[in-house]
Image 1 (cartoon, helix red, strand yellow):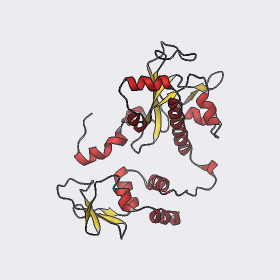
Image 2 (tube, helix red, strand yellow):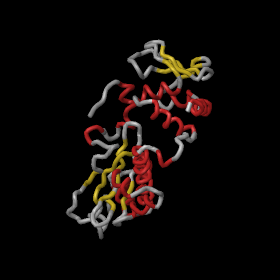
Image 3 (spheres, rainbow, N blue to C red):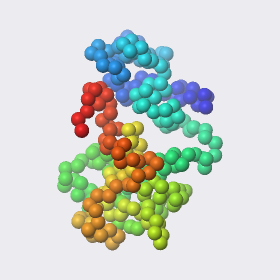
Image 4 (cartoon, one colour):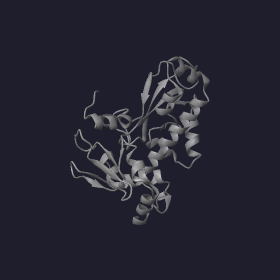
Length: 258
């Protein structure tokens, strides 16, 4: 694993990574910014491209690209490794992919579902018009990854099982229901992915569209919104919608309005 850590360091420039979180200003051969880890008015946070490290002269914190992400994202090292490996295009060596943790599989399923819903929205002119009539621009739809669950009993189920995921896993992700047979939880609904603080899809909220599109699978009197159930990734009381996009401003201003 140490070889892969080094490979990631060689492929990523610490300036590029940190500039995704902080507003860096050139200071000679280095870069300077306001430290995100303590309150200050004069920038004392320095990033060295030549050494590929960072140091704050105000609070004495410092380290490499991994320690910065671990501290600013408040996650454990294995999660930092995954995040930076993905950014660097490095495939981590876990051995047999079937042995990956159940949690990793559920993350994958939720991400694949978000991609499926987004593609379905792109094919639905009626739902796109509905969003446009309400003032949502394409940039907003893309940024928040809105989607559409087709008016079908099993379109998502078939999509995911066709990519190697088992019905039991998909059910654990909260995306299908069991009865006489498995079927999609979300049908004929405008889909809002719910993200964790690191921007990963962990759940969904779906707004019924039967008032806009006649439905064969969803009754008009069904709840206007339905959400994913509690899963190993999603606990409604612990997820704040939009935190992944707002956290840097919250950290920068040291305050939040709810």
